[in-house]
Length: 366
Image (cartoon, rainbow, N blue to C red; front, side, top):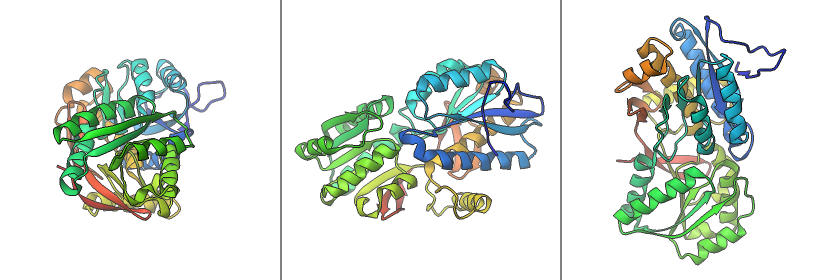
């Protein structure tokens, strides 16, 4: 069971002991990304239980303490910073949006290792930060080239939430489209939590694009997809998102997923031995009513496993030592064989198209 991190009197969570290695698990429990929270918790818990069955980390039991990464970024940073300053946690890991990471990383300031599991815009260089997620050069760029080569699609309109990941990814998309003679017809940003996309869809139509690059989070993507389907735009336009998974697919509904595509390092329906073993272990542990398995939840499993491997290789919970020993670290995961390069996880990325409420994996991207 994952404990909720607390610092006030009467809490069961106090300064860390020599018997446990305590990790702040920062995942969203509210807001547009809250839809991902339950699967993130379960996948991280599964990883911790497996690690502890292997005698833990450095002779200590691994314990996860839950922090709500869906709260305002400054609030998340305050809580994480307080946990570290009070000696409650040895490390930080989890999936949360880049707006949260941008304030959490400076607050941690290299005092403990921080494993950030979300796909993101790239470029993170803060001390002690290790990243398991996909980046645009390995996820967005080959997908845009595939669309141009296989479907002749070169005219895109970008629709994103208004924060760092969508805007930075859009800048990358401009560069990648220029490589293949493509163009961004329009670029539209909406506040996090947007539910009404009528004006946005009007601009999509007016842009005369062939496809929409969706850079929307969680419930925002659900609202956009439903409006897109109701407007009949799915008859003539492809939608591609590098951040959309089974939770969003289910909430979108089967009538609104035509022409919806994504790319990711993990899919539940990917028929690899490591992926199938992970899915079997997940449903054996949490049962058939478990939160839907998806790439973002799996990333939290990945984060706990990566943290474990980093600490075992370094032999000590020390950021400088971990950074000195991490390059080239390789291990087996649900994503196959992965390797740490420049503090990022090198991994395969696959392209998939929605088939009703499931993903049909088409191929591995180069």
